[in-house]
Length: 241
Image (tube, rainbow, N blue to C red; front, side, top):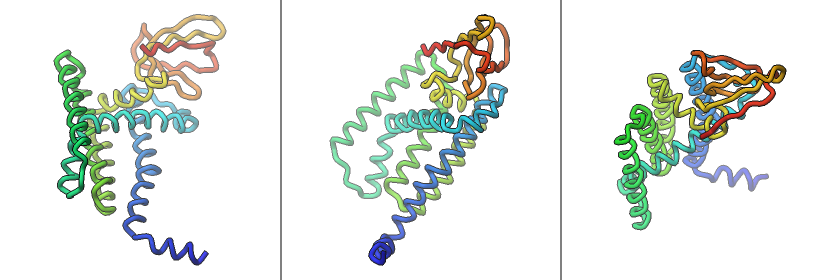
């Protein structure tokens, strides 16, 4: 036991602070941003699901993590040279092959983005994603190259930026959250057909969210968001195409 205590005490304070910053990111930042972004998503479409927050916490985090993973990969694909530049500034040795691959993938990604702009894609959504990716790549740079103090400052900054952007561009934020929902076929404006368990009547619409107890969707013949109790559903079909 004494040997263990001695080893723990010998660990530099910097490592402890770095570990704390990672723990806060995983167990405080992600859960709270997840909840905020889903509240914004529901507010954008004018509905609220109590059971989703009380019984669907795991699913909520899973959908968010899927979206976060997409943003992380996008950040690296779009802005990876930023990591190389910061590394050079911090006098870190970077392999030349890594530099070449980074530049190649970034050029390919930007070429695809330019084609998206030319083809008339949703430019507001693309700019929002680019803004989120810029914030994320900045935080990654700090985590890799800077000390714990800077990491905590970056943690606060990225939290503020994400929340600020999500509230001020709620429509674009909702489309980003839709990425995770669409991946699992539980929301994001996918087409859905619901069959009533008793009458067999089919109802079609655009799916907003499937919670533990309800299906929230916009009926094809009406406006707004309707809720359909899963206890009354014989089966439903979600078209992910």
